[in-house]
Structure formats: C-alpha cells, structure tokens
Length: 194
Image (cartoon, rainbow, N blue to C red; front, side, top):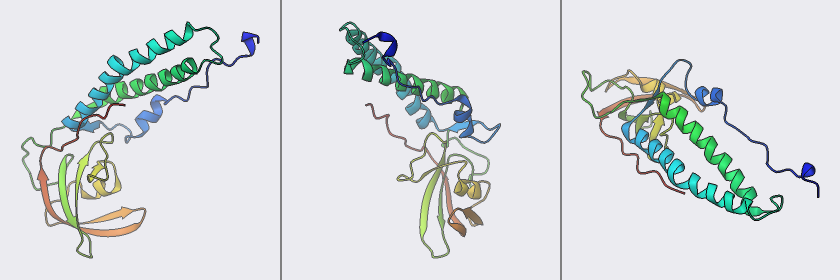
C-alpha cells in the first residue's frame, strides 16, 4: 500500500491555553495548597522522568520493526506520547500560574473564612457537613475538598463563625449556619502513578 494513503497519526485533541485559563475566573490567581502543589509537581516529574522516556523507547523500538501502519506498539505509543505531552503542557501552565497558600500559617482573623479554611456548617434541617476550601486542581468531593470558585465556597468566603450565609446552588437556595472555622494543613495524599 502506498504510504501516501496511510493515516500515520490520529487527530490531536489538544487542550488550548484559553481552556486551561477558563477554569479560573478572569484575572484571578491559581491558588493551591502546598500539598496540592507537591502532588502536581510529583505528577509532572513522573511524566517527564519515567513515563515519557519509557513510551519514547517503546515507540522507537516499534518504529524500527518496519510497517508502522499496522504496528500496534507504534500506533498506541504515538497516541500515548501525545496524551503525555498534552498533560505535561497542562501541568506546566498550572504550576507556572500557581500561588501556593499554606492554610496552616497564622492569620489575623482565624474566625473568618478564606482560601484554605476547613469549615463546618449546618443546613436548616440541622445536618452538619465539613468542607475544606482548596484550589481548582485539588477538588475531591469524597474528602470534602471544594474549589474556592465553587458556589458553596463563594457563599462561605468572608463569613465568620456564627454567621448564616445563603447558598445559591443549581439545586436551589439554602441557608447555611457556620459552626466552626479552622485553618490546618490539608492532606492531599501522594500522586498515584500509572
């Protein structure tokens, strides 16, 4: 078969810089906790120093085996390299924009809610919930980590213990009573390789 009719690569579905920036409000900083920053950096280093060299070696070996059009190792490897490179570009952009804020650092007003606060609140039914306000790259709803740009965090920010805030969420309007505000190190856990 003529090489001119063989599709050697698939279309690249790239994340544009505008899309990366659009996750944050215009003109805002990419606030992140020290644990979140360390996890992004661990992923970046793992991709650069471990996974990318391994995949590059596999692609190089597969390319030397002849016909690339039906070589699964070559085709999959090239696709995986594009995914790795896309993620590396994304992480580079996020790390460059990052402003690390340590929630454990002392503050003038420990009862007021800002980035990094761990907040316990109650809804009108008396159900209590605890959330930690973290960066957009650290969201983990199972652990109660919410983004500082989420509707809930926006309702809570700048309030104090004892205040009642109004949450305007897609599910409707809800009144939340703030029971406790703490500033502590927010555990992120290590980057899961692979």
